Image (tube, rainbow, N blue to C red; front, side, top):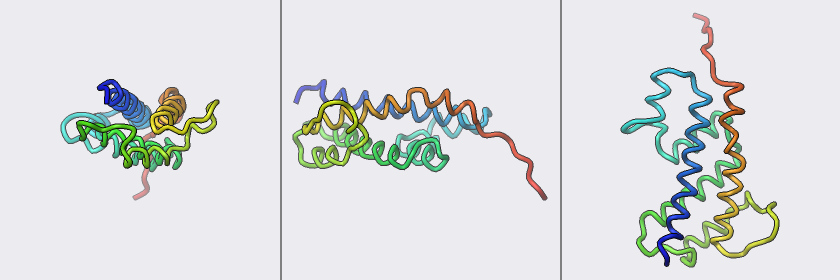
Length: 146
C-alpha cells in the first residue's frame, strides 16, 4: 500500500476533527473553562470521539453526521494503528460500506476508497461553514432561580 493512501485518510479525518472543534468553540461561552474543555493535556473534548458526541448532544450536528463521523473515525483508527492497512482489508471495506452521507454526489462508486472519499468530502462540505452559523446562536449565561 502506498503511504499516501493512509495519509489521505489521516488528513481528511484530522480536518473533520478540527472542524468539529471549531464548531464547539463557536458555540461555547468564551471563557477559560471552554478553553480547558477543548484543548490542552487530557481536555475532555479534545479527542475526535468526544467532539463527535458533544456536537451531537448539543444539536450542532445531526444523528446522521454523528454516525458518519464515527465510521470515518473507526476507519482512521484502522489506518493509524496498522502498518499495512488498506482499503482492500475486509474490516475497512465493511466500515466504508456503512458510509451513506455522500451518496447524493454525482456518480456512484463501489470501491471502499471511493466511499471513504465521498463521505469525508460530504462531511467537510457540511461542516466547513458550521462554525460561522453556530456563532449566530452561541450559548449564553442564564439566570437560575434559587
